[in-house]
Image (cartoon, rainbow, N blue to C red; front, side, top):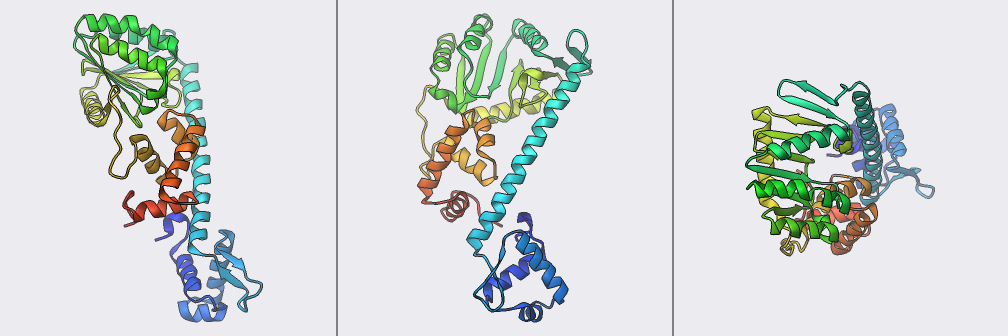
Length: 331
């Protein structure tokens, strides 16, 4: 049961036996568990290294198992630290890969390979998107994660958007819920509505994406650094799958002009998504990126969730959330 938290089966047996029989010493535990003394002491060493067993100065056995609540908090904190370190290594690897690709890029910034085209650098991406905007005939579908866009970028997008809308191109865009408090974005969305565009928002988005005429999809090479490069994909199987992804997200997203409703738990979509991400062990910084908010805002949302659950720690919040049916319990 606790293998996912770093304990093997024998370590867990020893820890549980120490909780159930706190007066047992080494000899009693050896007899109770059927282990050799050397195997038991090796387990105690591992449990001690994990801070699940501590010296007990005033107990005859000389050691004690910490309470389950404290033990799980320690193990989860350790895993969160390891996850944060892993995320940093992944981001560093992505950045290094993008730099290597850019260093050996083709002169025009494009590399074509069958049904895909690699666009390297901001200039190549903008040029290709401009070509798509000029050639699209029926529909543009867009995921726009990353939080609020600058007023300059929003204004610069109006002319190509207006040209497409005048041609009768259907335009659907999904932003993050976080843009609901960003006035420049709200003004831009109002402009889109006036010209026939449709906009919805979702608490998180899977990736930055533009699909033209259900025939061509543009995706970032590195989701963490969209300006580094993009892939233009025309393979029918891939584009069909991406269209299905868009439709699923669009169906669940809320029109930006409509007030957001709370679910049966009393949670807004953003709070519900934060709870799910916290349960996955993501850090405040990682959650902030997914929601398109600042780390400070992510911490505030987490604190509000703890308060709603009457919890003093994130681990206790997870326990209470499972008990209330807000999260699926352990199998």
